[in-house]
Length: 252
Image 1 (tube, rainbow, N blue to C red):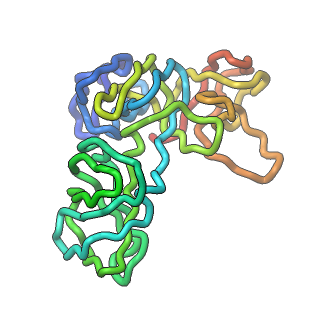
Image 2: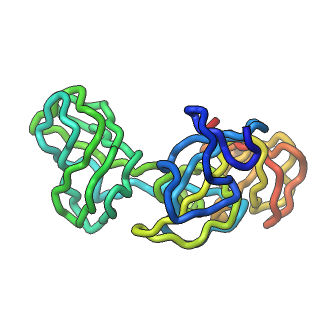
């Protein structure tokens, strides 16, 4: 097992190092890899601004244009579902691969989800067929679905507000676009080095995202709110704006 090229779940070794960025996708975003020292990683696509090393990254939010949409009346075994977005958001062909169709409501089929396998370019407010795993329960005319992007299909620097952190960068990831993403591994479990927004966090503090973009913070519960736990500060006192050793517990 390599220290720099993760081993995939099926046992093959990735042909991309955790310290390498590429413009040709070697794996589907979300693919898991691990190294012999116990660290875990997910393969990710950057379709926006440059992301520096040692920063927390988050998944892109579900667009309101793709939330709770009417569908066609699919039958059991169908592998294509048609949805019509309601606003201006668009996706290039196969940008959503590895994401999900989440069935929100309907006389039958509600509560199921289906992995997205492929799709063409999705234009604003235009009916589009999405290829997915076979439908298990038939849709009625009142069935609605939400299109959920792949959590690693368009990572962003963890924002100042509410977001779901999905990993930490191991390298500087150059600028990407929807049509020309940049692919890399992001770390999700084990010893890591990330930037902190405040000084004084001590060993053992629970680690959460900060309101400083891309940064982590030791968490002390004062208001009864419990944010997403992403790890622990494992080795010592943090210094504001410096990089600190932590133990990530986002996804094993």
